Picture 1 (tube, rainbow, N blue to C red):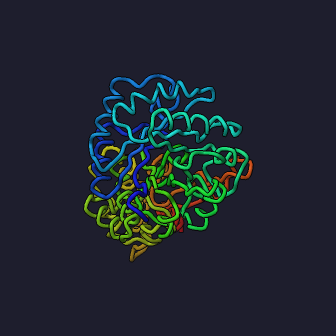
Picture 2: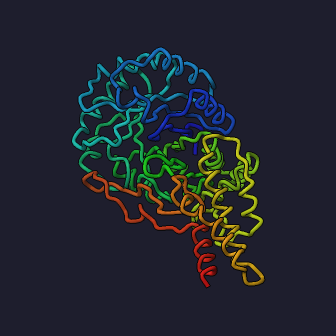
Picture 3: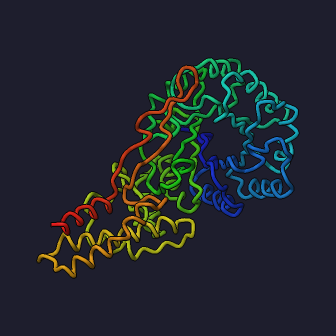
Length: 407
């Protein structure tokens, strides 16, 4: 690993973008933690994607200037998703003001486009931007996941300027593990070009929206740092909660203890209980199948100073209250009286509301993630594990309590 390795954040999720203040704070975080890159590429930024051909507004240009000038250690990359009919002239005219504002890198985002026959056009656009604006160019290709080649990927990489980075998300769009072997395989099919990893974690956009990801950065082999040209983390819409995983990823990138760094962060910011309450079985921070009564009581009293996290805090508190009622039934030393049974049932009536909440807690399923790779045609293939059944700890306890009450 060399000092030139790229490490940072790519704000590339679907959903309401971060505020300008959050972006500035992200650059501050990266400077403090050893990162060197912030990428402006949120899908719902109007002039990033849907209105890509429109000039950046005065406020956007001013924002770029402030982001670029925030830290001499953190470069600003600006991403654009050009339409199918985009010309080099349009792109250069669009991006020149960003360059003038201090942008250091241009990212051409051709991901999630419904065309796999535009490799020559994508290469042409990248070369024209590179040579005219005299800035580094990175590409998010239309074929960005998996380890197989395709006609699109082969045509894109053949003759592509060696300075242009080509991004890759791993063997799937979202994945629990990324190995050195997978990165090496991707390098081969991308013309022997080391992949720039767009790592879709802790992102929780689109169909993952009900899930909150506050866990440590796991499942990435240590030597991946050396095989890839860099790593860019795609965070959640919830900025402050994303910093837990980013702190862990930063430690991993520097060869430090990623779990210890994560634990220190969540404990310092009062997020440990919420992290555990929003975890899933198999996660490093899962609270276990039988948390203590004391733990459930702590969750009911949990306080998190972040309005963005309120839906999950509220859901976790309601679930914990239900769990405590269920435990009172299951752990009663003597048979309950009719009055006590009626009281317990009354307090458990909130179970229906709890299960209908969009914010998922305590392992509530179904857990839906785009565990999709791309085949040798460049087309997406979804793995059945994209949908996983999961019963929440609360649901399990309430069902047990209802059976006991019926007896």
